[in-house]
Image 1 (tube, rainbow over the protein chains, first blue to last red):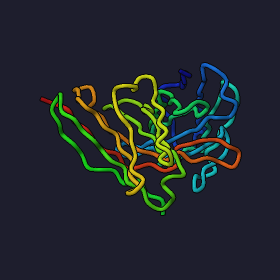
Image 2 (image 1 turned 90 degrees about the vertical axis):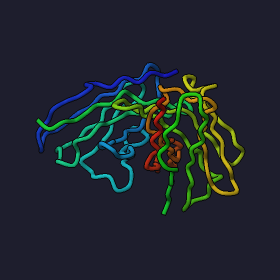
Image 3 (image 1 turned 135 degrees about the vertical axis):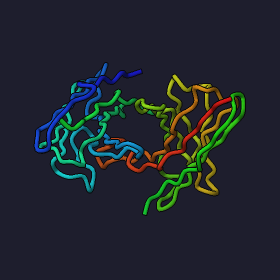
Length: 107
Length: 122
């Protein structure tokens, strides 16, 4: 099984801040890495696929980068609606595995 | 519009069986994999397994192999997740999600159901 490790597990930030979340895989994924956002009581929502491709309808302040084992999700200017938990997921193997999540809270 | 509509909340006793469903519409059911994701209270997401309704090919995550059964009925465009004997530790929210793919061949869960809450308690 490929293990996915996110850091940090949580962070506090203010509206307008630039936020970066890291995801590391236990083996190389090429670019088979996705990012999801989940708000309380809601289903997850796909943000980024293929490490850096923005899902249709997702604001451009979200971006993804990386390849191999190290990946990053960046929110360029945090908005009130962005306070949520973010998960990375590897799709290099089927069915794939999620990271443990990063909760973004209001400072 | 692509939709995955999940069955309603369930409250069961330990040892009981259960089958929850995920009915899809808006696309060809047999052309996309459907996955099931568990989220225990206050915890993260876990991919349980995935099925290709076209030929019922099913792949389970090692942690869930033998613990649940994933199936699909092409005639009614519905995927299922079932337990033969529930335990208290099965208490969780369960999501179904479609696995889409990009032109570059990258897979991702692009459309999600709203989830089914399963509570197992004596």
